[in-house]
Length: 283
Image 1 (cartoon, rainbow, N blue to C red):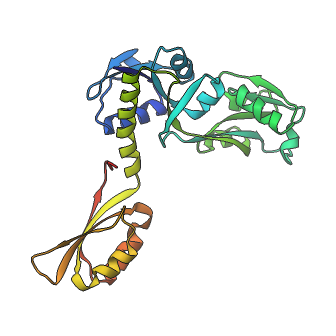
Image 2 (cartoon, helix red, strand yellow):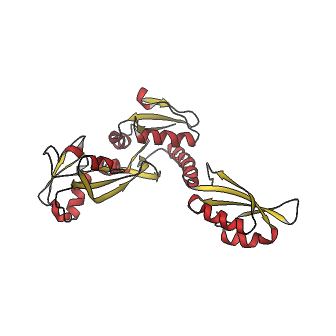
Image 3 (tube, rainbow, N blue to C red):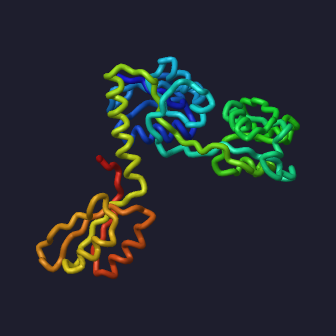
């Protein structure tokens, strides 16, 4: 059995719980308990603050964890990123007051910057040869300039709405982040196998995102032309029908291309087109 640390509450908790559910794994509500025995997989979920997860994994309190890449980078714990999970995307950016007269990164020289991510910011400023005063603040970073605690901020940005509400404008993105599965650098073989099984389930879900399974009937003499313009994972599936003049065509199409392809197929004579959601792709 493996023990996986996940965020106790918030958006990352919700996204993680949904990913686990899609993988056939049910866990309890994090805000009500510290540890939950999962159903559908031999694991326990350990509920922690997101910034405590990297340390918990590096100390061996948990075998693995699901946490934002930004927290992994900030804590600097000796971990390995096993898999990017493609959700809870955000960016870490520098933001300044709208009337600051910002004219480039050199503006930050000698300025006071408030942040909850001093390690990431100090590494960035060092790489840019910028000397600034970095002030670590645990929360409400965005209000620091308004109350005179800082000249600018470095913080997580999702939509940018909070910055606008506080009279700030985003000027430079330092890091793009998303949820990642991390694990201890050394695990017993049986736990490594469990991590691999978990990744197998996660990958089947992630690979299916943005894809649709499309089934249609098409004149047999137009099959070759249709196959030539369809993507397919390897090659579209073609099945004969009772009427030899028609064939059934099955194909996986990206959501972004779906309607363009359907319009082209309709012009080729395709009929009875079914568009189905994909839950998993097992490779």
